[in-house]
Image (tube, rainbow over all chains, first blue to last red; front, side, top):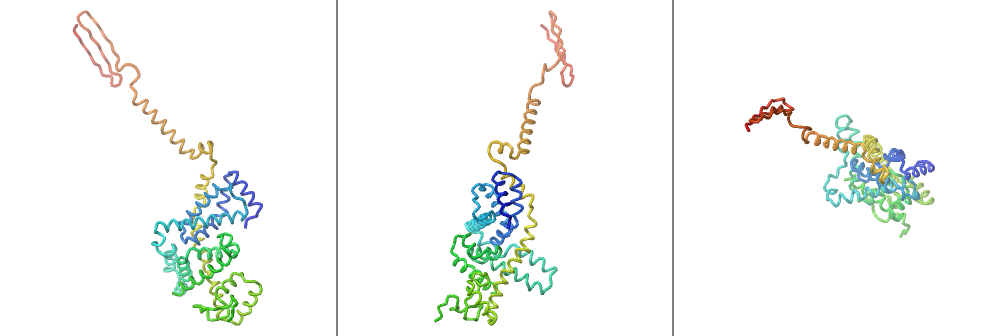
Amino acid sequence: MADPIEEQELVNRLKKGQQWAYQVLVTRYQDRLLKIAYGITLDMEESREVVQDVFVSVFKHIHSFRGEAGLWGWLRKITINACLNWKRKWKRRFKWHHTSLEPDNDHLLYGAQKDSATPESILGEKEGETDLVRAIHKLPEKNRLVFVLNTLEGLSYEEIAQTLRIRKGTVASRLFHARKQILASLNH
Amino acid sequence: MDDNPRHKENGSMTQQCSKYTEEFISRFVDNELDPVGTMEFSSHLGDCQDCAEVVAKFQKLGTLFNTHINTHAARQIARVSRVDMATTLLDYAKPTGIFGRMTDHLYIKLASLTAVAALLILAVFQGAPPVGPSAIVKSLDTNASSVMIIETIKEKHTIIWFSET
């Protein structure tokens, strides 16, 4: 986590429109935001666009940043909303349901394994990992979001509840159902 | 009937133990139980293979997903051109207002202005008529006739024009 004083200084400089501050912001948070976006969309290309839009949005609205949840919390929330909007956009175009349910990394995972990996490794962790991504892909959006925030970001139920503006009990329920649905998919 | 919500009431596809629900175990995995519940279940885990398996499965999901993100996703993230991304974003970060608009895409604007100026110069110097007369004219007039000797400027051709009056 960034030093709060350093973060405040960064925000001040961002509000002054200093270009190096924008560069620092991108360099510092780009990877983490990409991971969250990828966790939700499971599509790296789209994640790049989402994160790019997030930074543009941050640049435009930095003056409205009040600092309650910290800079990272604010960035994360914008990213989550951007990902959800992205999914809704694709749903409107009927593409989300018509694109393959395979995550965009299958060819990489399988391609790399066919040539170099041993049969044991193909049937081991990597296959489990690919199946897991496929199972997560099938999760309802609400459950997946909670699963990603809990697993990837390590957020507590309280933090997830605040971020998504839902009840703590709802977080617990969605997270449990996400796990249950993933395990059910893996067992099929 | 056992009315404790943490205790299992329904059957489950992955758990045989009837003492705790999988939702309860899910909360245990996330350290979201109260201290008493955590202690009780931790103690139970030592004796119950079924619940231990559910805990292991839930934990494995998280581990696998994190591994996937930190290997595959990180590999792809590393391929994202940071410079390009930052440069593109800096375009958005430029100051707005009159000065900002003037300095946006300065090179493109300068190139456009240069091109327009070049076109204007070409139009002026190629499309306009040549400066001065179209030929050097020498003439001789008498009472009976007139003679004009004309030399074209460009090709230096000589034209003799004769006229009887």
